[in-house]
Length: 176
Image 1: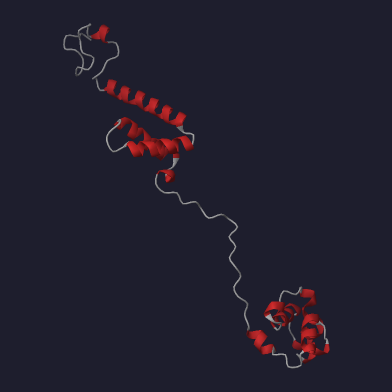
Image 2: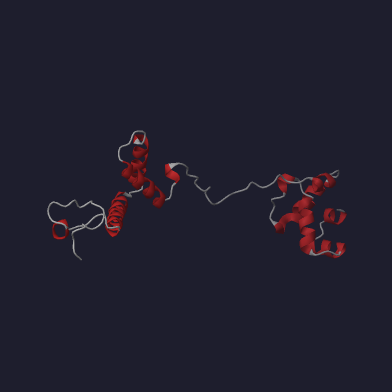
């Protein structure tokens, strides 16, 4: 403290204390009052010299022990959006649920759900994908239904005009 009051440079202080200049510089900065520690590094020793010479009873121990308040946490990334309910669904989940509700028809108790789903599908501009998914699913269901033998496309060729296209399996009189 005495050498700093006399105006010694950072190099002279480091040699006298047998420390590196950076370590002495950081300690000198901590000897300053909290509100003055923002001084540029090349002016720390000069500022400390001025503070010490202006106040002969400078309580450097008090200032050395003082710790600054913690720095505020600055999160540069926006907080992730947490979406719940229908808006929280992924597109494919939303389309799957809408498809199921559509297949249920206008059952009692689904009116509000249908409205909420429709608004979200419109908001995300997924109407075309919903129609495409429903058409694809309908073709697949029909193909599966045909494969089971319960439905034939051209009934006049296989069964005759009076046959029921939904009768189980091939007509018993039909010759393969």
